[in-house]
Length: 578
Image 1: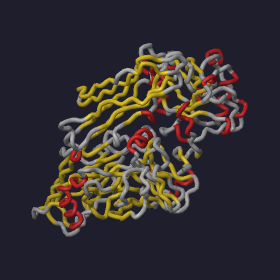
Image 2: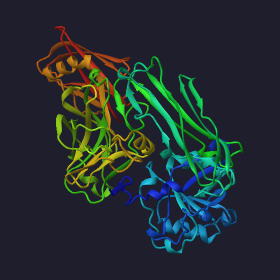
Image 3: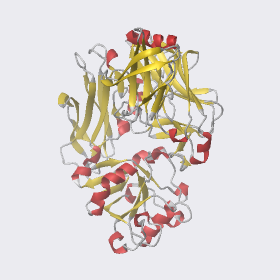
Image 4: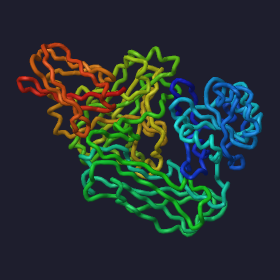
């Protein structure tokens, strides 16, 4: 299914799956070695550039910033003044002020062998089309774009003239070169998971394995895969496969490792790292290692990476290329111990193009929890179908500020639902507006997981039809569940009964707490998601709304416990998002 991708209101285009074969990697200095996400210019987008999927067009050289003699000299929009430094090197420019093609043509005119454009906004560069513009057809050298974060990381070393980078498809470029991509590894089936359903080895384990490729021109011997898992700075898993005697050029092999499990799991972050090795020293080690993590916590479930506050990271925003009617993105959940948990709502993000930003305030996004009660085993089961969904809970979030575009927000469900063991659920966010793009994350890839387990990950709904594989294993809805121990449900119900609904929620400066019918001294304890006391407030009220300043509180989800003078307790959740 085709999707339209939004680069935070700057450009709309289509993503080519062949992007996975083309890389930008730093070979030196050692501290910066590795692959960096990229986008690259293609003839179909109005360029005269070579086909970077052909290894013969790969480039390996030193990176040099351009200068055009203006105050913003690294934009490269005018005639370049440092041609002697650029000739025979990879020219580096920043995005902005003029067309991509103009920047590339100016660098080409001074002898650059390739051009790297550093993005000027903090977005996922892999998910949009780079248009050549007026000068693109005259550009005959490779042109790529890397992220703002990558540019900031490389900047000082580029200025020192020490960064050597590779651009292209490296199949056959080196003699000795094995490796893999993020799509080739088996990973935990989620990134953040409640510890309450992950307590022992009988409740949770992780299968480990990866496809290893011989990208080089020579056969490789004694190819092995190693996996290590580190928790609290201690290596708790370290396994290496039996060696594959010979791996021919262009060939690949799937290597399995022993399953990871712990007799008792502790809450915290489990960092896993895969490493591929062979007898001969690898000439391109940047793709021999890949890392990821699993975070066991109190109340967040997410399939995508989360930030320091355990909020899902929305790195890209999509909608179908020909959206018709409702557009809904979902994540699938099923667990043998789900009955220990309850769900209270969803975290998600949405945005618009810059042109539609004025329509954003007043936009309403729905949040839904469905029971998916179809009886099927996996995606290959003839009985597989996404139908007969039963709505269990509903919520919504109405955006009020243009500044909320792209920010994580929270939609509280009208019911707190205690789940059932081994039942399938879909948790979804839905828009009826064709100018809205919903948040996804493209930094991890579940392609090998889907091939191995044959279970749905991120279905989407468009034009009256559910698509089980969504937009593909390389992009996952940036939805996180507020999932907590069911023993706290009584507290949630007490909140509803007393109608204490703070607003705005999320809050960035002040939170208003209605005090209708409450008189006298109140004590409010604010606790973080780990139960730590952050702040205590005492106030005398007489039925008026109490304002609480949250500017000194870090972003995240907090529990407010309010005790009144007559001993009654009200508990509610507030999200701080500045």
